[in-house]
Image (tube, rainbow, N blue to C red):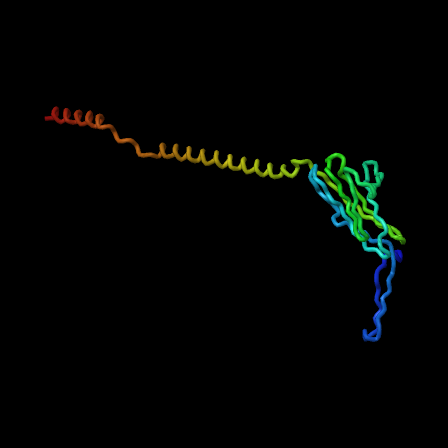
Length: 197
């Protein structure tokens, strides 16, 4: 570890504390931290990528870079405001504003870099840009699943009712013999009885 990694304020206390105390300031290069290491944003929206830095001596200036497909870093100038980018920097933080995101042009790695008299430090933020309807696909998938389940249940219930109706017809009581049939049998019986006498 280099001495710069231990920068900050150190205190020396003589016990009891009333006997004396001394503070020692150890300087070093900035320590940069991304507010969020990854941003997921919809196409057409704006995004703010931000970094903070602890530094003694204070940060003198910030730089922002974008890593393109070939791996080269392109400086995003913080002195001129364009339609696409602009930078807002303070001593302890910096923000890169990216306007009107495009799904093919803007995703990638962005680097914020803080400089002071003793050196520099940087942090990488990954920007992902989704198509307009990308967030809608999971919802549409759930709706489709629900519709399929409802359809299956409806078909199942309809078949159950149909089977129950068929069962009722099959197991219903046998129809009684018609009265005309009974009358014919009665006449036959009466004729036999007469013949017997």
